Length: 129
Image (cartoon, rainbow, N blue to C red; front, side):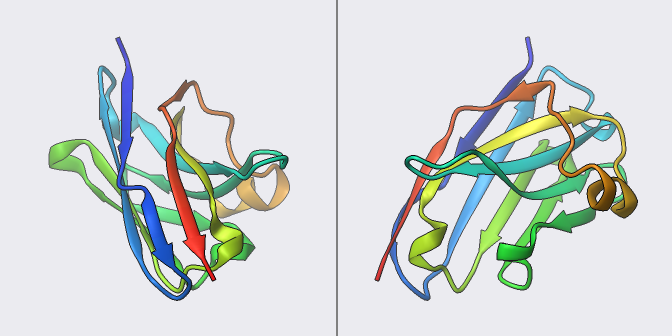
């Protein structure tokens, strides 16, 4: 059984930082891209960032580029989302998800975030002004 366990959400003031973690089990970690999505109240879910576990190449959506960083600890099957300079508009439930395959920059530019096969539960991030 594939499981993705997200954690690390919480409340922070604007300008602060949080680190989310996503630990995967039941899958061959290297064969996937691990992505972060978020959904704010009354808004559609949107992509945030993805990392190809195989070579740690990353992609960031424009609203978070330069402020968020995704990294992985392959030995622990864990991906991290380091969120800096947080803004109230970053408040959302953050989900990690696993998409089978390798996705290069062209894929994101032409198609957008990959469609994941597996989803974890969300973790709530609240940024106050």
